Amino acid sequence: MTLACLRFEDLVLMALAIASVARQRVILLACGSFNPPTIMHLRMFELARDYLNTLGVYQVVGGVISPVHDAYGKKGLAPAKHRLEMLQLALKGNNWVKLSNWEADKNDHWSRTRQVLEYHQRSINCAVDSNSPSCPTTKEPWLPEDLDSGSSPVTCKLLCGADVLESFNTPGIWQPPDMDYIAKEHGIVAITRAGNNPYKSIHVCDPLFNNMRNIHVVTEWISNEISSTEVRRAFRRNLSIRYVVPDAVTEYMEKHNLYRE
Image (cartoon, helix red, strand yellow):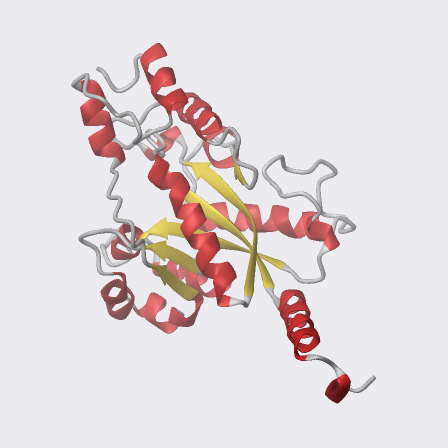
């Protein structure tokens, strides 16, 4: 049968099938303190997945949250064991975003974002090609199922807020080779936040500007400027934080008397 004999509906289905095969598979990775995790941390994943999937060239197959190690030394940072437990509670019932404890629990030091991306990318590559002799025999629990069943590679992209892009231009925070590597080899998906201009951040930073085709800015049209800092302040003052963090996380904070001292 020639293409001329096919119905329009059949041609559309064929085009969609070809597009789905050619799509680049993506796992979104969010790094940070998550101190405590809020609904905005979780919503970032939904916004990024919808945006990338709508472009038609990506297929988001999973999401990963990687909380920072205690050695990061941020003032008021709750111990990793508590932040990991709160994230487990926040992610309960989420069927596609998983928790990775490699950064927070499996090391004795703080890891730069590039190292976190490299580790998770290696684990993803092993899951896609499990026959490699350098790959471990056990599969990481944060990996999606059936990664090896796809025909395309899987890229680990950094998911962050637009304030992180702005920090790329703050001296001393990021190493220039790391900025170039992250943007070029992995790519960045940045969610807009009030008070940040992600396009200006890209414009004034050479590593970002040179790799701007691999950076996606996603507009959050439902304005939601939740801040973990403000959550901690409200909780310390015995003010309600309901509907800002999951109820199970609030109960955990109460039980372990977090952020009150």
